[in-house]
Length: 265
Length: 289
Figure 1 (cartoon, helix red, strand yellow):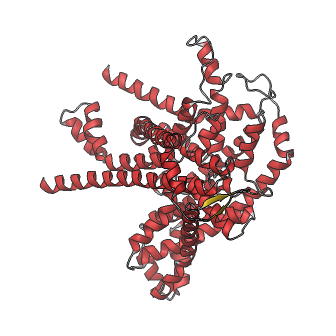
Figure 2: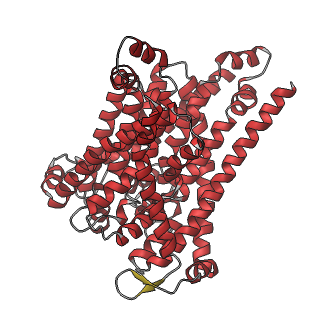
């Protein structure tokens, strides 16, 4: 009897948490497909008119391109920098290694708005007013800790003896690294890539200080739209981004398993 | 790779860190200057006036204080809800339950903050789903104000921080061998006392580091109060943003940010100190036993 009661309680709690976690995404999805301008539940009639509105709005098109461009610049650069760094930190004994460790992670603990104001001050002095350049630099700094942490967690599990075996068999250092070490870092690279990508697409607090009139990212355009209009166009954007997140979750789960993601964070 | 190439590998990181700390050097310098008229410019002379202004302004201090209290409340709520959630994810006998919850958590974790703030705006509005449900169930006779106040910001922020906390303690709970819990039960402990006297204490370090993470996210919350606070809820990040984009006062914004940064780092250090103290005490106990 007691067991049954506790079982029921746990089940109810789990169901409630599941509902809490998914409710915003699910209702945004419904809203994006509804015909009406204002949300009502259940949805009276479905239509794709807000999808048409989203894809034909110049400001969203431009922001989507800018955000994509930003991700294309930041993700590879950040992962490369993180690969170099985590290799040096894992394999090179040098004085002050712990200090370097702490330095790399420092952008994580600085509140986003503070980082934004700091970069704004820097770029003003450097007379750098191209929004995309400003955001690319800031995003690389902000995202580096995510990528380094994911890779550092992975480096502990790398088998050094296979690398040495490859060297003994005549492979050069670079060849041994590319053929033996790098494949073992796949989970860390994937996890790091996912975190960096999500941060770049989603960042609001830092980028809001760095955008200019010509470049605007999706979250910032969405915020401006929500502030000025009351219609489901942003629901469309949200739904598309959630679909992207879902794809990432499924792909990641297939390739390395979701549990790895929580370990490398 | 030979030692000679190692410094070269550190170069990209060094450049990025130089930019980051360079930005803070400039920003620290600007915080001692005075605003110039016109668009956010600045001029001499150097002085502490911006800092004095923040530290003697009751309104600014109230916002800083409210931010800290609010972050503590969000952290406590994340622990209370996130720990049992992580426990189910780690220990449920059903694979479906475990994967479903983990999947939902990771999906929530990866879907953006603006998206989620917007989702809560739809759910919690005057004519939102939650109010409709409350009215239909007869729990209230008129719509309850759930957004554009602290309630809305709290709910949305909790939804944002919960995955961070649950994913942090999930790994730790999973690494507690099931046999330890079984042994406790075999020795006569009930499920509740096993949970509170075995599982929870073993995972205390993870709880503290998860709480530190949630607290630092909550104290720097910006988009959630902006969207769901309706101008009535202003946290310190919003205050700094307004100094720049409403008052056009970069030096004062920089000084406020510095004070905020010092407070944020001090509280995080307190968390790390606590984590270290717990770990040390445990090691000492183990040494004694």
